[in-house]
Amino acid sequence: MDQKNILPRGIAKPIEQQPDGTWIVRHHFRVVGTSENGEELVTFASSEYPEKPTLQQIQRSIDRYRVCLTMYGETISDEIEKVDLSMYMFTD
Image (cartoon, rainbow, N blue to C red; front, side, top):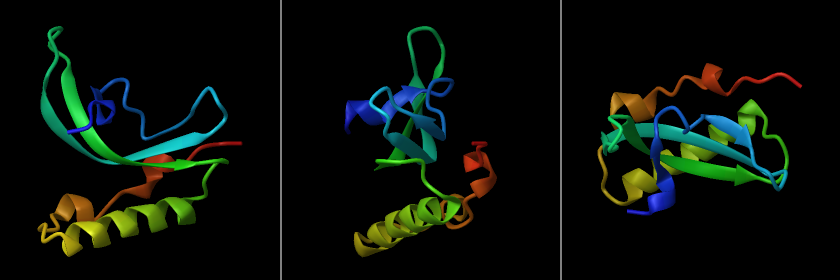
């Protein structure tokens, strides 16, 4: 598993701008363990954008992720099927 996709829950924000100006959107969080400090560790799927993404762009990325899972024979859980986009709302 790619270590950059494992972060403490408090640090793994659903959407944030990176220092280089790009944006990262994280979705489908899953708990994978606990850190030495007792913090919950999560893994996630993510997408990067050169500019601030719209909700429609985020939805398309999530849909592509879902399609990829089914192509590889993964079962689509309710959590993956029904993503709450409100966590990706942000102000200008």
